[in-house]
Length: 363
Image 1 (cartoon, one colour):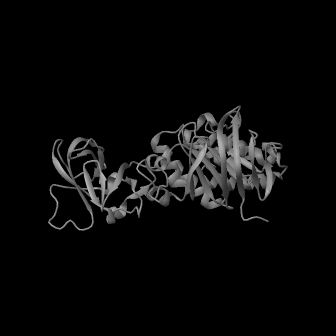
Image 2: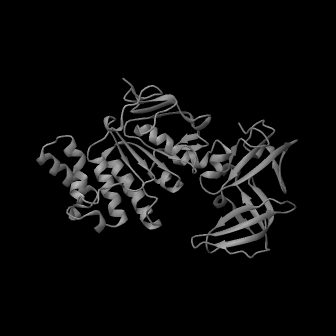
């Protein structure tokens, strides 16, 4: 017996001497929702295709319930894996009605007609498509077609559900609606799920854990909050959300950054000689002048070089005095500052994340 529903052990895929996926190890608990997140070419889709059985790995293995289903010498075919996969293009059959599409996998399993009808009706109620049961795909919106694909995949109660960028063909508003729908369905059915996306918002909303991939390798695996607040690599810090990466170096009892320095004791780097820090734009406060008592926060003088109004917030680009550094700061829409205005940035060291960087290891 094993505690893992799905396990990847040292998984790799190479094309000749070119690695697409290298040494990927990951374990999913039963009912867990995990997203593979990263830029194009990072190896996430190749990993998903190996999970589905469409590709043979060149290294490592894949296990389900402790049984190896993929290795360099043997691959259980897709139809015998107990998995369902939802593609970017939905892949629902245009010549079948909604009900027939959803029933297809059940009929292949030789389930009685009465049970097929009951299960199809139940899942269509869950995805709010019962009233469209006799419609054809061409008569449906993109969001409705995606719900059909979800219903067809879930109704057979697979061991593992695989989703390959399923929302990329939808407009922004519908994507936002559907990512919530995917999470709602997961909570209802508790199917172990692997979701591939390059959209960090989708991953943050839907996932129990996120696997950030880069150049075929895993950079970090964490829950969404920890990933955002405590990135472990420079790549993750820059890829998850908007951030400023500030490189500092110890000089005596000070940490020196371009254009300003702070007491070493206020920087969470221990005894390291230097570090990079991830500072989120929305955590920086702007002031016309510093207070007499600056407390434990960092106060940095600078000049506004750019600004942009984005409806929900202003985004400013500020250059600290005497440096070429450019710091992005987000403020509420009612906090307006002019370009070329001198301001003070207030940075709370308790809200920054030290990460390994070019100036040393932050530990």
